[in-house]
Image (cartoon, rainbow, N blue to C red; front, side, top):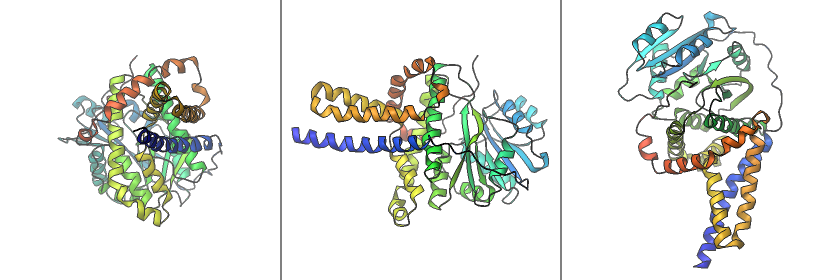
Length: 390
């Protein structure tokens, strides 16, 4: 029995250590900050700015107004709002603005359905760039110019911009903002610095229009359309660029209930996309599609909150029952803390960080419960309500 426990301990330790060292490598890589060198583009490409809005009456007007005041020729971009189950009064206000409003009324709504409806409405060859913005996002006036400069390079087909917190009004929002920036450091800046593709995040992402059209029209995912989209594109060797200095403001989770729902949707999308594409692993290794393999590894890995929680629990339990096995667990727990600390931008290192960290154990509990509710989560669209509370 003791031998079995020893073997099981080492198997779990190796699996956790691989995950943690992976985070550390890319976290350290994010410390190297290279300023972007983008010359002004000679051509203003045609841009379709797509906003899927499901019951987003509280935030959609501010988002659209920000999109309409761009330092970009107004005849070279269109704001396209896909209004799903929004109030008639909201639709009337939107109709009065110089945008394209597409009203849909799906029985079972998803972002995938909304975006596909928009693409069918716009046509296959109407634009050069497709930009995806969430209904709660805010962009500054230079956003489209910076994006257009990036796409002036003919090699650029996909770009992820830097999503940052729009609100820090609660401790949960502060923790969510830190989590977002850890993702930006490890899965975007760190990856790009080591020659790998940046991760997509669902909004603030732009594509060569024809590429997006083709990939989306065959996408049938219920939640996390971006997960399936990036797996498809990475398998076809499409590189994802990252613009760390081009910002899109995104509303952060303010309540634990919304955190639970959102993370449930994210976890479901993560493991669903892993199941859909794991059979491509060996062909990808054979063909040296390392970006795809890297993304598949991410999909199979524990989220950072679960990794943090389980590593701590194993360390404590072994310290109580089998101290000789605990030392190595405390070492990788320390390495994990180092990886996360390095990835947190200095502006978040305030006393408020201590208060936010107090929510981590509760967040772990919610994520742990979510592990047992993933199957049903992929059968329906789980909406996160938006609107910053005063």
